[in-house]
Image (cartoon, rainbow, N blue to C red):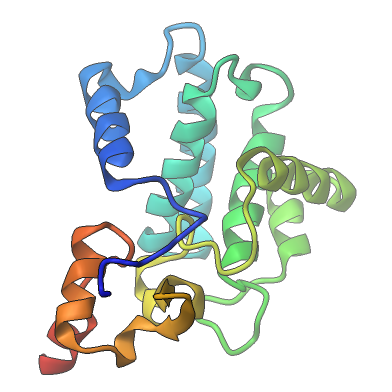
Length: 194
């Protein structure tokens, strides 16, 4: 009964392990022809996050930049680096509700465009392209800031024996099975004990 967990939007843990092993084995998987533009875009993103956001944003934005660079063919080789950097930061900001005044840090998405010297429609368009490319939606657990995981209801909602439930309300045994299957980032009861 506990083993009936379903998460349609996630890869199987074995697939994720294989993918991660391949990435490590190929030195990041970024081709030599893409590396210079990747480094330029990553530098722009890192500087922006350092000056305006946080280290946590920089890490997640860097991961997205790497994912775009590893894509075959990489879309980063066409277009201006500042436009890509803007689209990356805008996308991660959008997923994490950066423009919500109650969040810290807080910034309007159009201000990201201005900081990169990109028109608002251009920044918005590049962000939309990235979201479509990777099928990114609001509350997307792959692109959430780690500090916001607890606030994301989609991470904790699983189908158990045909019923949708918040796994945080389930017995520890069920949480352990969900964690072992790679469906949740950690065992919620362990966090409650701290």
